[in-house]
Image (cartoon, rainbow, N blue to C red; front, side, top):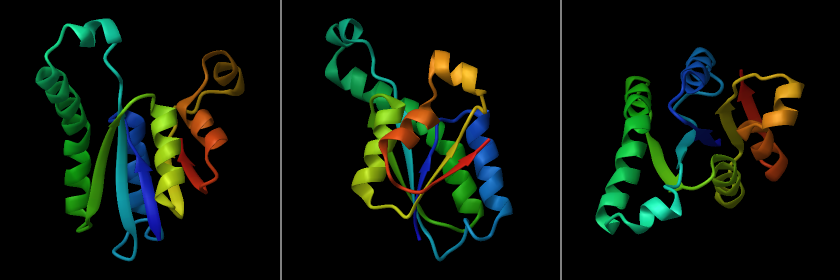
Length: 140
């Protein structure tokens, strides 16, 4: 099975990985994993005064900080994963990756907010689910 794992480095990502580790059907050598992280875009006014290499290094460092413990997790499980960092809105990046990658499953953590909170604030998970047709496992 080809699985896309969406991460942000939060405690909810850790819960999601713990869930995967506890369920052999989702974590094992028979699956192919891609881990995706959306790095928030630096505001255009700030980016305009930064050197291109500095901005690129910032994006890379931010992604590396999120990926480091997740690389360790996959390594301890004896599994290989491809790590992909994209710059942009998290919901859009994840939904696009799921659509374009032809994945069998999308796995992501959620804050677990109620309906009222989602109505007022919105939710990355809600937006992802609304914008892609890939089957999803949402871990709260």
